[in-house]
Image 1 (cartoon, rainbow, N blue to C red):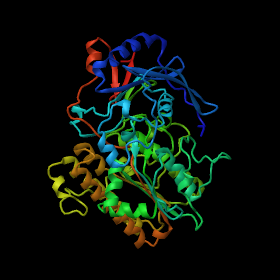
Image 2 (image 1 turned 90 degrees about the horizontal axis):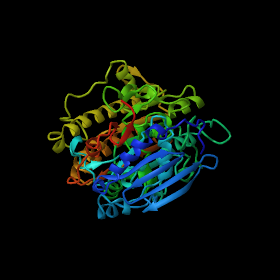
Image 3 (image 1 turned 135 degrees about the vertical axis):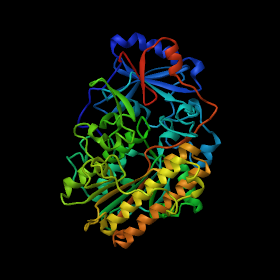
Image 4 (image 1 turned 180 degrees about the vertical axis):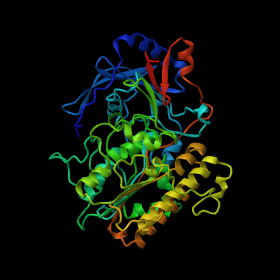
Length: 509
């Protein structure tokens, strides 16, 4: 679907071409192959994906919305763009941290092109290997950020009124499809005769999951399990360890092959893509950190200090689901619980924070429901995320009951989004296959159950549709595979910025 606004984009400047070519020689040396999956760039009017043993050069036809391969040398690193690879869980575990020759890169051409539609795109984008362990980030056993299928793949479950009850189906989608599908399901008014709902829309309506024979829902409630591996989630639902997720899957449709995040497959970029239907290169939240050429400054969005105000960076014409809901129903009530992409929400956790009025947090997770004590004691991240997610449930339940923090909410929300953080913390720290990861899903599943119960108590359950997604996947890495491509670049005398890990900018201070 064409975007309304074509951004100026970025490609390597002529004055930087020589240094970029020299940097590529370093990055593509076979000695870095264990940590460098590929390097992406845009130069001379075309996009490239390069490795030490092959490369592909391609071009986009904006009028047709297609891509043309211009040249391939050696092994094409983007040859496999399948979405079904490494499903179900047994297939994923059979080949841990696959080399690119065995990996898949869904929507790779679109992924690369959208990134370079941003004027703040890097000169070189280094994609880390599936095995790479970021020792300087705590040696996490679970990782994401790549466009490899396991790191890009998020769960997608949709259920309730207006939704087909097909269960787990062998299909896939994209996270940018979530917002248009919610808009269509609710019956929101499109912007134009092309059926677009958002000013900048990269996603499509997933008609394959909608069935409004018995009417449309009056309410949509979405859950985000940050950083969740869908194969793990689906298996736990099937085994009875996540009964509320299983309930949603039984009363709706789930994509076995997941929904693909946008490049870079990181937190805030894809939270924003889910709520706006725009890819990171189009909505303005390019990464967790990047360099803004226009201002000559580093931009950091993924920190406690910057999250509440990150949406000030949204580009022109970028709409959120809250915009679409209010455009159709001006008196509707929309809610954003612990979700940084909250623009035009009537109620927002981050709005409290912007006002310096943080919702009450328990001092510790001790005694709270849906908390696995085995992990809150040794893990600070597990403990903190448990407290935050408990706060999320308190807000959601209060709003659904009609009263929270001395404020009455007499109207049930037309749209409510609830962001849970525990799964990301646990899958990073322990890896997606760990008992810690499983505990985080069990805890989060219990919290979903509490919200589902609240909709029943409010008398709106039968008039609700529900979604469950994540902002990206999570892949097990190899703790022995460590290293930093910045080291050989600096040893060779290059001066550059490496932002967000992997966004390389040359010719800037």
